[in-house]
Every structure is written in structure tokens, then in C-alpha cells.
Length: 191
Image 1 (cartoon, rainbow, N blue to C red):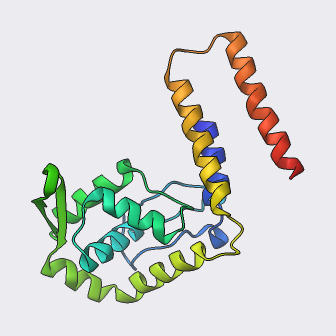
Image 2 (tube, rainbow, N blue to C red):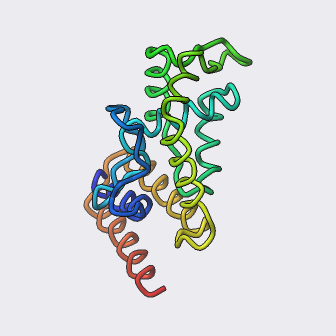
Image 3 (tube, rainbow, N blue to C red):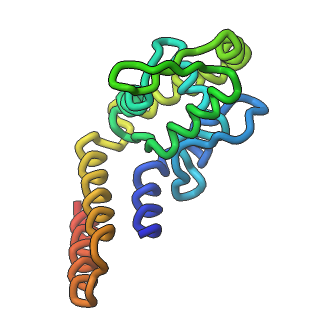
């Protein structure tokens, strides 16, 4: 399963120029968001997701789910950060004193930026602006990642995960499963 995820990430995220991802604030370590792709490419470099989330929260206090959707929309569906990446980063922002959390509607946490968070954004404005511009460039039409292909790839990944998450495959089922994936790969190669 890990090999399949890595394969899909390579297709999905390996588009970063020179394997650099979106980068982060100078000297900002840790908090790497996204997933590594082939060739070391990743959507967000060290501290990059932290800056993007903080910038989005500064623009509008938000729930975690809203932030996931905001990033997905900015990238035209080419990347959707997982809750397993977003929520730990939000917790880190709170621990650093850059955000506060209040109970919002439906018991969901509402994240708001603090004065310290705004100061951090001012100190890293150039990096944050550059990162958002690169996100917009990556999402622009003609970037080689048509939304319908990304959607179909995400559907395939979900179907594979769901099936492999159920009862173990028999030898016959595993062979049939592999044949379906092989046929899809061969069909893609002919497009």
C-alpha cells in the first residue's frame, strides 16, 4: 500500500520545480506539511504549511476543515492536505502562541490569529507572499494537471485504500486486484 501511495504522490506532487516544494520561511524548521513526492518534491517545504495556514487564519478565522478546503481550492484540487497534516500543524501554531482556539458552531474549534502570529507573518511576509503566489501558479490552467485527472486519481487511491482496509485479499483476489491496476496503467500509457 505504501508503494501505491508513493506512486500516486509522485504523479500528484512531483511537479514541484527542482524538487523544492513550496518552501518555507527562512530559518523556519519543522512543521513539514504535505507528502514527499518522487524526486523529493513536496507541496510545502519546512514551515511552509505553517505560514500558509497562519496567513489564511489571519485573513479569516476558520475551522480546520475550512482550511483544508481553502488550500484545496487555491490549488484547484491538485492537492488536498490531510487532517493528519493540518491538525497537528494547527496545534503547533497554538503552542507557539500564534493562534488561539475558541469553540465554534457545532463544537468545532475556531482558529484565530494572535498578535504574536501577526508579528510572525510580518517578519515572514516575503516568504508567505511568495508561497501563495507559487500556489496560484501551480493551480493555473495549462500546468499539466487537469482537475478531472486529479479527481479520478484521488478516487482510485480511495478505492484502493478502502478495499485493502477490509479483509485480507486471497491469492486469487490479489491477482485480480493487480490485473485491474496493471490494465489501468497500460491504458494510461496509451493516452
